Length: 315
Ligand SMILES: Nc1ncnc2c1ncn2[C@@H]1O[C@H](COP(=O)(O)OP(=O)(O)OP(=O)(O)O)[C@@H](O)[C@H]1O
Ligand SMILES: [Mg+2]
Image 1 (cartoon, rainbow, N blue to C red):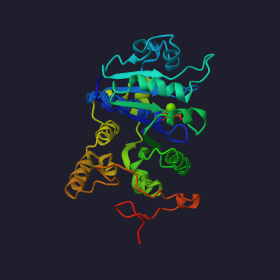
Image 2 (tube, rainbow, N blue to C red; image 1 turned 30 degrees about the vertical axis):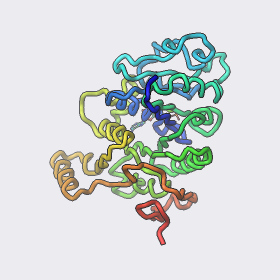
Image 3 (cartoon, rainbow, N blue to C red; image 1 turned 120 degrees about the vertical axis):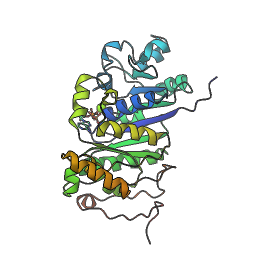
Image 4 (tube, helix red, strand yellow; image 1 turned 120 degrees about the horizontal axis):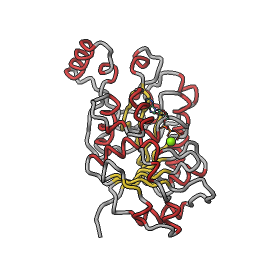
């Protein structure tokens, strides 16, 4: 018997198209590159596309439902990644003539692999219906992906409420598709603003980048590219934080300036002045006790923090 404690994490959002599958594939690949054994489960039955983003679509012959039904043994149902031996993938079920997998069935699949993997990441479908309910059924942790838009933040808030109601208290935030120029001109909320509204620790901030789209279209997670890039280091830093390493946040605004001389000076200055933003409660990465529920009008104004550094209400 192995003694690994498997961390089972759902990647969810409420709103569709914000980057759940992108985060699941890149974070999973990064953790595997760090030597962790990782299983990625696709709970998005009707619009499944994690296999495409991983470039594994031609290798998928069975599903989690087939493993549970005894149609194939476990080792045949889990697809091993062709580039990274620590990474495995399995869609929970297919939409072709199959009844969706139930919560109990997913739990029995997880029981079979518990202790074998360091991480199981479950890519949730958008919304809060059946597929989402299935995805959160067996997890003890969640990553909420948001984009800096009020619709995404409001949906995330709803999802956080549901997760807390299910006693899933370890929740971290990934802010995706951040545009530093817009943040600077105050036409887009910053990760810090979103952290203050949702009151959960930020574990990653990923800039908007065409490299992400190119990688998706190639079916090759961006993280596998050799070149350094801001989104790539965002995923690497996110994985480090997930395993408990306190990595400072990159000042995206400074790092993404188009002028290379200005960029160097900005990065140098920001490092010197320790201007990296910090909106987490490392090393614990635990949700603050009080969850501040934003009202819709709050989301349109620049939020003012009601919480102090310890996550408690200011006097
Ligand atoms: N940081 C980014 N920069 C640019 N494009 C991005 C970024 N993150 C995601 N995208 C693009 O946004 C689109 C949606 O991403 P993705 O499929 O990961 O979202 P999702 O939340 O899983 O969607 P769904 O709710 O439909 O499952 C994709 O085309 C992806 O390439
Ligand atoms: Mg998706």
